[in-house]
Length: 310
Ligand SMILES: [Zn+2]
Image 1 (cartoon, rainbow, N blue to C red):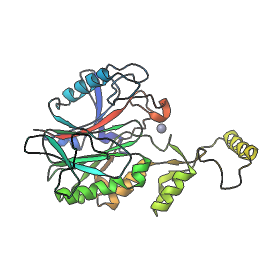
Image 2: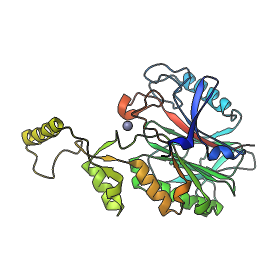
Image 3: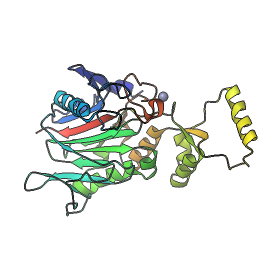
Image 4: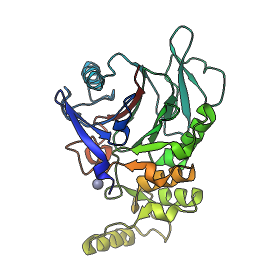
């Protein structure tokens, strides 16, 4: 139902996704990249925007140059981030020498050693000309906009970060650092692996059940064909695991990360009408996106980008 609120924009042989709601703000740049265009070759074929062992650094740099230039952000300062599946976000600012610096939201002090990308999974800024990016290849990328105060944020949420409530905390961090009103925030949730393809083990189900009273709404039953169900039973029988002690890698359910995101955003105070979920599964649409699950760890990365124009 939200699919039509996003549009694929094509320019210079590249293509990316924009939210039609966010397109209305002329001061804002935002995008969720696709793999179309770009100079990378298999197994990262297309517009790989993440430095990986399976792609050459100069190709990724060329892809980034092309993509950021097409977005009109070629001269912006890219704020790096070392993504670690945590619940931590940082405020990006400029110091008196015009260098990018990071702060813990609500704190005055700059982080020591800010020349190295800090370890965390969310970035926020009110500074024009600062490019916030999140790299994903199945995890959920999320952009947050406070149009009244002109504050923007980018958040990376896989199941571990979502379990640690990074999305809910990021909204709280925006409130703390910039006095953002959650009721005025708009959240754009980009392409990620969806419940159709995201089988997880019992340990993931139990971790969410232990952390969220609403966890049952985050999971869908496995899609078992009759013969597949028989297979699973026979494997369990043959391996003779006692009940409740099946190995962790056996799929137990399908996780809907968008349901987790929606829950955390509404819990943080966002209005349901301001939560815009792009209707794309990265694992179903490897023509458009890189998918770690579908293509393996050697695949490329897409990025979610947000910035305030200078
Ligand atoms: Zn899918």
